[in-house]
Image 1 (cartoon, rainbow, N blue to C red):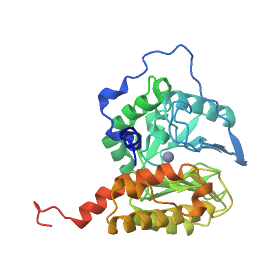
Image 2 (cartoon, helix red, strand yellow; image 1 turned 90 degrees about the horizontal axis):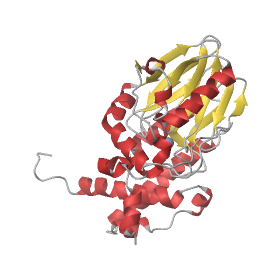
Image 3 (cartoon, rainbow, N blue to C red; image 1 turned 180 degrees about the horizontal axis):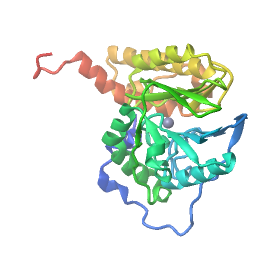
Image 4 (cartoon, protein in one colour; image 1 turned 30 degrees about the vertical axis):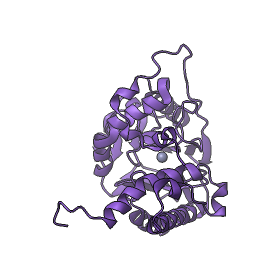
Length: 321
Ligand SMILES: [Zn+2]
């Protein structure tokens, strides 16, 4: 059984009431993120997110962030969870490349990927329309949730929307051509970036590796289609939104297997008439033992898939559908 407290902890940040944000007024110790870039290739660095949920200890620094050196300047993929993180990231990008930041991409609208935007010129930040719309819809709710969970790490953080609307196509940075591939599935708008010169695919949260995928805004069917499309890109290296970057298809395979397994377990439980708590307590396949947060994400997935299944099974009677 889940306690009420556990159920609250499973809710997506967006549903936390705005009034819950002011938890920790002032703490003396100055917080700072220690960014440890790892060079993956010539002019490509990865800042690995912690394979954890967002907590007060990690300050929300759980997502991967990438920095690329180009003739036109530094290119940054995702900006992390807060103003503080974004400022450290912007300084690091300038240090590593010796150039100003020419372009920042937001791969999707989730808070661990976008709240560092504040440290960059809005015109340099590019995202597809669906990402910008998602930020308009959910951004302030996410900010409240992040303040509530991480406290002082979020101090001074405000939502900054991308100032450049990104369409499918190539952006030419001189020595690099980066192809923008808008997809969907993890959320209603997921941006995949393919550096044609290096063969690196930056998959955002369409790919998780060794960490269970998050599904609060997912459409699992579309996500599976996106993974199939990703598999067709002639990639050399895949950088997932969470987890290690590898020259392998492990992230694609694992994410697909997870979605299939979880979707199957939840649907089967629903058909058998189990309630939410019973479904959330069901065993997971043994191969998921090595994945961080498997139980946690499975429980969260049950909590938001169940209402959808109920809606499918018992259509509203007050409409014509
Ligand atoms: Zn993420």
